[in-house]
Image (cartoon, rainbow, N blue to C red; front, top):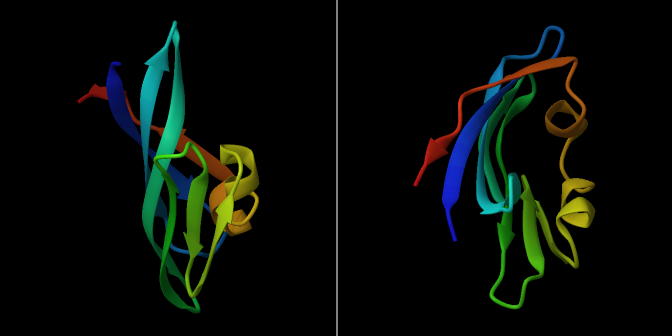
Length: 98
């Protein structure tokens, strides 16, 4: 299956800008993300934010010192900080094939 990645730069008020890397698989004509990684920088510190698909098709997520398992990408996404999931503004790069 064709895989690709792209970057989303998120902008949030007076917070530093952050780059989030998404990795996805091409399903028909749509890329479906299965992995996300960001070394997140905020005014109050730094942390790692990620989502990773497991072999059983579930997802694990990390949000700083919190982590967990999720049955879907959407469920894992809900556990990430709003500065990533609901930024004031974002821009996405072109898609790069792996």
